[in-house]
Length: 276
Image (cartoon, rainbow, N blue to C red):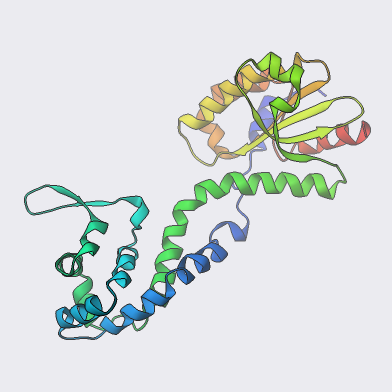
């Protein structure tokens, strides 16, 4: 079938997001449950007029509960977030949790002291659940790739096409020899009576350097894979982010023999079925 680049571009999808893309509630529940006991202990501080005395009572009882205070301002200990003191010197936020004075400085200067005394929240577990939902939006970029791979997996499975995910080039000595010292991980592999198809799949919603880098890398990779007898390289990509990298995707499209979006994927599916 003759390739039609303009048609390929017109077919690019607006989104790859299913409803479960937006929030990973399982991950959020795990994050909250891991600190739930400490958050419930910190509930003692809510509504206390003499917050300093209440903090001192908790500190003397179990100072470890303050290790989770970071999350109340939507940061995590492992993120190593910093703040500037009055002298303009940078310090790790979490280091404030090593002393009673540091905890009070944190509560007063972040505004949490007034927040807790005002009873704007009744339960810190529920509050942190909301914080985690907000933080989870930052993970959407990483989930985009997972969702695209899952979409292809579902399409292949629905069509009765056996396939493997995450296949490494070292499994195929001739291919690895052609690639040299660089080991390559392919998203999918399909083996038919004709050949082994090694597949990369991705989706780009926005602009940036990544789509350009990907197009160049796959344009270089395709002839190497295709040059090894019994192997074919396939690139399935989609998303209107390609509209901002039209020249790069055009070069790839005209140089990569088997390149599809999810609209034209049916052509590849038909070819695979004919070789089964």
